[in-house]
Amino acid sequence: MRFLLLTFLTFLTLNADTVYEKGKRLYKQKGCGGCHGTKLEGMHRYPYLANRAKGFLTYKLKRFRSREADNQQQEMMIPFAMNLSDDEIDALTIYMNEYVDETSTKRYDDSFYQEGDGGS
Ligand code: HEC
Image (cartoon, rainbow, N blue to C red; front, top):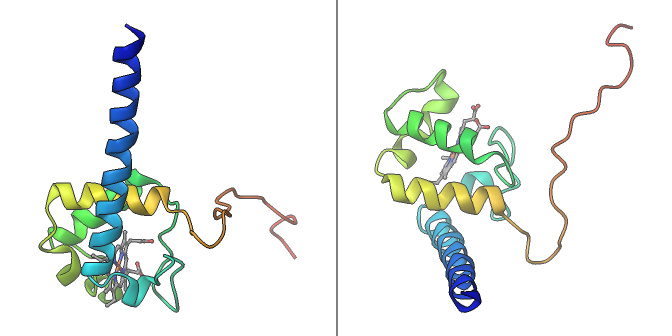
C-alpha cells in the first residue's frame, strides 16, 4: 500500500515537472518573452505574468484565442493566442502561475494593502 502511494506521489511530482517544463518551452518558442519579458516581469504596457492566478490567465488566453479583445492594445495578443491548443494553454498557465526565477527564490507579492484614506 505504501509502495503504491509512493509511486503515485512520484508520478504526480514528475508529471508536474513535465508540464511546467513544457510551458517554459512553449513560452520561449512562441516568443511570449519578447513582450512579457524573459522573467515574466512585463514591460511598458505588457503586463507581468509571473505567479498570477491560473484561472485568470486561462480565461484571458482563451478569450484572445477566440479573437475577443476589449481594446486595440489587447488585440496585439490575438495572433499569439490564436493557434494555442487547450493543452498548450494549460501548460503555459501552469508555467506562469508556478513560475520561479531560477536566479532568485523571491515570488511576486500579490497581496493588496490599502494605504491612506483614499481621499486627500
Ligand atoms: C507583441 C507583444 C506580445 C506578445 C508576443 C505576447 N503578448 Fe501577451 N499581451 C500583450 C498585450 C499588449 C496584452 C494586453 C495588455 C492589456 O490588457 O492592456 C497581453 C496580455 C496577455 C495576458 C493577459 C494579462 C492581463 O493582465 O490581462 C496573458 C495571459 C498573455 N498576454 C499571455 C501571453 C502568452 C502566453 C504569450 C505567448 C504565447 C504572449 N502573451 C505573447 C502583448 C503580447
